[in-house]
Length: 436
Ligand code: EPU
Image 1 (cartoon, rainbow, N blue to C red):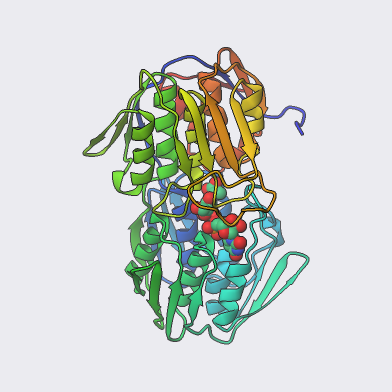
Image 2: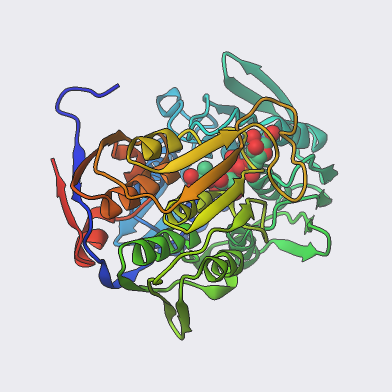
């Protein structure tokens, strides 16, 4: 529901975006790494921290617990020696999903922890049962009353955890709990996303003993103490992928400084199949536009597959591809809601409950519209659209940049939670965008 005097972006479409943009540090690594700073009383310095809403909220949570923070232009120093509270304040209820990751660090410090109800984008039910079961296996007692989690543990113990699905958050939660636990923890069927490896690298720099074995297995030998460290947050591969789609769809050419081939292999393969030209350069990737985009079939998956957070900018590409494309979303059950507004703008997208992919996923026969058929190309016309979730937000920016006329986009705070200086970056590339 739009509120009076709500901020909005007004975007005029049809202008080719050209030039250079620097990719920011990854939101989904930086926020977890800030939580990891609670595992030591020594100073931890993080570089390349994006200045976005979710980082601000995480810093506020740390400050509220008693940590001292110095933050200057992406360089953040956290000193947790003065942390006195085991309770993430109810003021942070439903802000995002980060509070659940405070469980392990607070249990190590205080033997108890209180975590308020979680927020985050509405793209499925997003339970935290894997997190809670794993922590219980490690010796925590956890109760949940009115969506507030209360946990106790004399000392967390190493354990063998087999995750039902390679969950990013559950893997991180166990990691943050295992590094100071008594004994060795093995996480099987774990997530191995580059952002998680980045977190593991920070933890190792802080004194943890942690390794990745074959078959999605992390092995963590608990140590008694961690120390201060310096770490640079890896570049945001979701932001980089979004700018690739902007270049291709606006008939522009964008050099994304800092984009890393190693973390984007699946995305680059999909771009190549669709016909978007790109060049891997020493310090980034140059994305160009194609004369003609080809329709393809695609499924999202956990790493090293095509990530679910790339789905939305890629669907935008497929609306302009020639022929019938199919996208099977296998990570979240409800991540196509945003396509309603794209249809209103002229896209031809139908949603289906069936698994339209090479293999059935967890949502087979479960009444979730988690497959999309996209027929293109169809011209897009400007519209008044409201952002439903973060990644859909960037795809709406792309739709507006492509559409004929001026689009008005509201609920822009959601996009500012996850993308640094998005308006400034788009303007620098030549976009006509006004903030009201
Ligand atoms: N799941 C459960 N139980 C659990 C945990 C997960 O059923 O206890 C299910 C989820 O409902 C979902 C699937 O497992 O269907 C994967 O969830 P996962 O735990 O991997 O996701 P997450 O940790 O909540 C992070 C990112 C998401 C990203 C996913 C997948 C952060 C803060 N969020 O979420 O990013 O889509 O991993 O890569 O790191 C975003 O940045 O906009 C975003 C949504």
